Image (cartoon, rainbow, N blue to C red; front, side, top):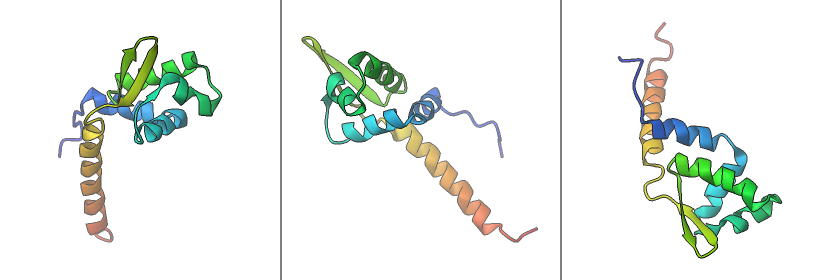
Length: 106
């Protein structure tokens, strides 16, 4: 078994982005539909500038896309945002199954 499996950098960026509870909450909110940066910032008592930093990291992780409409930036979940993460989690699940099958084989 190759222990140095290479994963897309999007997986690394996605997990780094998901490490922050604010960004996880933003993704949950966007699961209900698009929102402006100001709408996303408001529940956190955060400035739009502060939220833009979180959004930028989510964009770099390819989890969120944004579109500027006039003076407003609208955010939405990226299409297929969680495909690479899902693939990685499926591999992890297969590993867990092997561990479960081999318990007590010492």
